[in-house]
Length: 103
Image 1: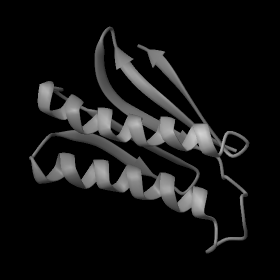
Image 2: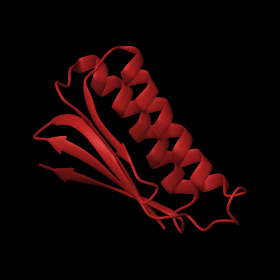
Image 3: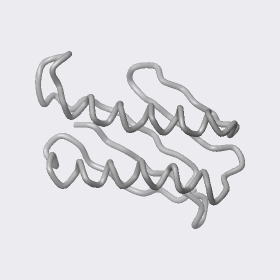
Image 4: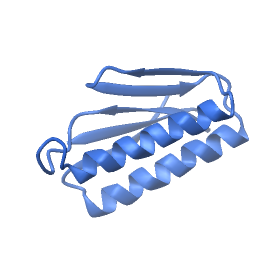
């Protein structure tokens, strides 16, 4: 199962951490894994295109993104990611789950 941790500092959306594997289908054919990856990398690339300073890592086991100085605009980008993830949890709840952590 893919677990998506949406990370907040009080009410400010700071980033996310993704762990696990969907195991919906074999490697290279797993549409759930592909959907989560596409949402995550689109978010990373969108933040990068607006020159946000981020802490980003992806070691193939865990992907983590934290925005250094979040703003309204960075939260809009992160909320789009969150909406996509929550949508996936509705259709593929056996393969992906999301939760919110306040740091």
